[in-house]
Amino acid sequence: MSEGLNRFLIAAAGLIGAAGVGLSAAAAHMGGAFTGTAASFLLMHAPVFLAIGLLGSNRMLRIAGMILLVAVVLFSGDLLARDFLGGRLFPFAAPTGGTLLIVGWLAVAASAFAGRKH
Image (cartoon, rainbow, N blue to C red; front, side, top):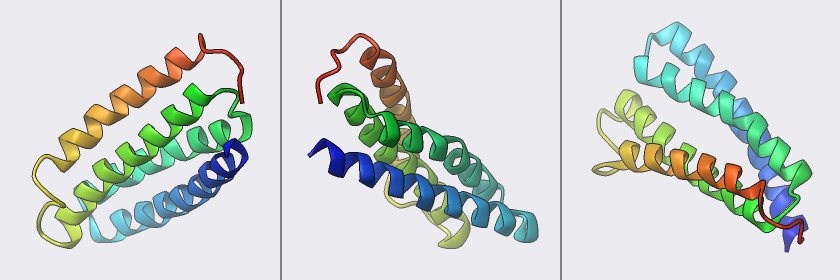
């Protein structure tokens, strides 16, 4: 199970990194303020998913990675919906994603104290 999740996080890193680069270009050409912010969040979290996928040293770290993945998709997805669809994904999608980003990063910190069980 952990190897499959690690591979999933590595794949997510690649896709999120590519999306971040593409959205950065879109923001530069179309001037979407929300798109630029979403691109920045995607680009800053892509290396995190890669690191967790490669290290995945304990269950807590992998859970933290999944929390961060859901969080960045919600947060960035809501910002992108505002620029491209003219509305939100759903009410409080961005604040929910932002809160989960904080929770995910706290889970990363907590994983430092978890055992190295796979």
